[in-house]
Amino acid sequence: MTTDPDFFDLVRQYAPNVINNVPYAQKLGFELIDLEPGRAIARAGYSTEMIGDPATGVIHGGVVTALLDNVSGVAVIASLKELKSTATLDLRIDYMRPAEVGRDVIAEAECYHLTRNVAFTRAWAYHESKDHVIATAAGSFALNDIQNFGGQIPEGALK
Image 1 (cartoon, rainbow, N blue to C red):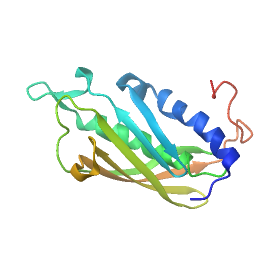
Image 2 (image 1 turned 90 degrees about the vertical axis):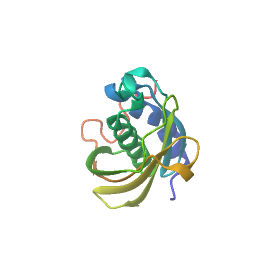
Image 3 (image 1 turned 90 degrees about the horizontal axis):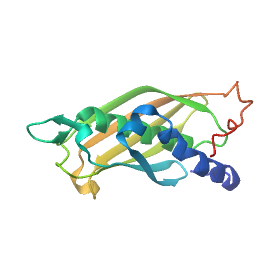
Image 4 (image 1 turned 135 degrees about the horizontal axis):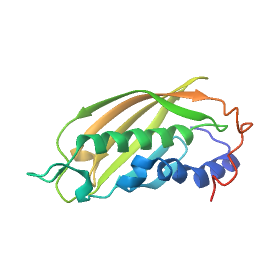
């Protein structure tokens, strides 16, 4: 995916805020760990707040879904040539197996196609390796001009 290097530097500064400013993602401690044009990787560190079944200690599937949704949105932003707002239109999750107790979950997403108004992504959640995928996702995201900001990043967004 071809991206203007100067614009991508701006995206690289802004992208962590996309995850860090989403209250749910912030509460769960999601962290952006890598970013390339059209691709993002994030982590959800294991914690007791994420447990869906106290008897097993397994992370709730909603946490995995939220992680895949957030990292997919960042991959979309990392694929753009100009800043746009994004909103999830559709996100399909296929669960392969439960996450293992006590282990962080990594999510990797790529934006593989852009139209003028919609971006398409695919993503995977796993522990250390995509050899044992926890879940996969296919998403579509609305792309909208940022009217209120004149197409610019809001003041303070890069802090």
